[in-house]
Image 1 (cartoon, one colour):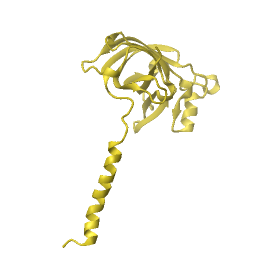
Image 2 (cartoon, rainbow, N blue to C red):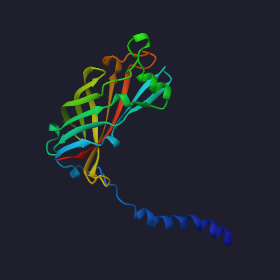
Image 3 (cartoon, rainbow, N blue to C red):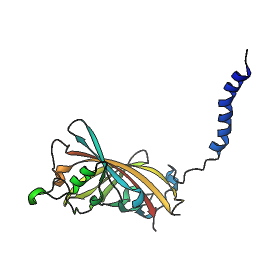
Image 4 (cartoon, rainbow, N blue to C red):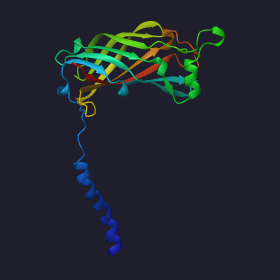
Length: 217
């Protein structure tokens, strides 16, 4: 026998679901969509407020530790009809490195003891830069291998970034056409003269890049 209380218990979740349905239907579409047709040819500049490079290293063989380089700037020249001709640059302010530990952040940027070379970047590190030398589009039409030169700690080495298209559209905040990408690569910090506490902190550094470019012309 179904009592009034039982009927209410059964009906309440259904009523909540029905009430939520109009709200879901009215949710606005995101300005950026994974639609290549939205990408237009031209020159773009990175939005430094929404572009960053995350890095991770292994600590003592126990776990990976993460940090960030934010405020990334750069340029992109892109023609959807000829993606292999794309060119990209980026500038990464090493002096703005962030970690979850104030002590570790200070260690990354402190001078060397007794006038010796710093363990990591030192107090006045130059910005890191990247400049592409070639772009090889993937067969899926949304990925590419971006080869280029990375300059870090005064050393320039070739790197290869596995990149993929995330979305394009008109930014509702700036009113500008925007296109976004993500990418990954792995470098050896010893190649760039960053040798502090090797091998207890791994030589390999994984980089995860997320960058939004706004159209300028």
